[in-house]
Image (cartoon, rainbow, N blue to C red; front, side):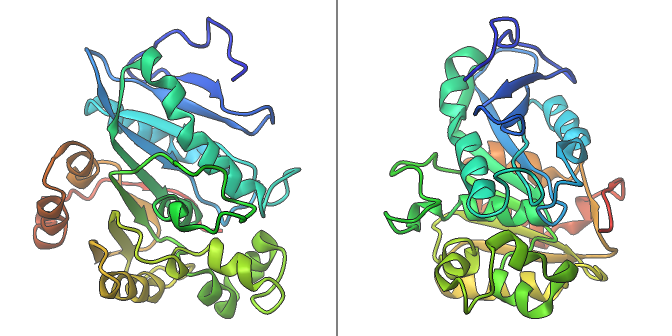
Length: 289
């Protein structure tokens, strides 16, 4: 939507195409495509920053470059955030949904394999990545339900995600940012806290990997642990692990590739938990809002 023919030309390697999925200046993404013939598995990247406009998709560019070097297309999504016109409820959710579904339009141009799409997010982006796996459960009359046939994800991987919005509100995370995001408290907007919170939309039916720093002092690891327990009890395939450290986003862990490319997702998730020794210590420090 809105791209010139020059913008639609395929690029490879660490270069990317900036593609608009909507008319707003913040409704765009950066598509990185691997060299060689497709179809290519895809990772949809969603940056964090407590949903606020101070943070943008540049946070995920390093990870996008790492993924494309492994033969995986990376769709680095920008979206309207708190402080942007149209951001927060419902715009933030409408944008990430529209950006993900826009991959359908890009298939014939970029040779993407939509059978192998994984969402990856950090912090607030982890929340949105997880939310994408369960939006098919939204009520038909929901403000943030834009499609009866949303793009089906193969899985979601998130680090330090704010996955239970009512719990985040109770903890008053980042000066009560959830109240800004949903434009009210749980008592004022109960339906929004259900429709926007993955913890309230279970089971999602999609495999998930949760990674959380054991000493994260911004988003407590207890949020990920309680969600993993609840999701597993509901029948979802969820793997959760704590890592040493705080809020670094690791770019070279094999699970990013394996979940996108392997057919046996259960074995991939099991490998994440049972073989942490294969991880390296390289990472990118994101931010500490």
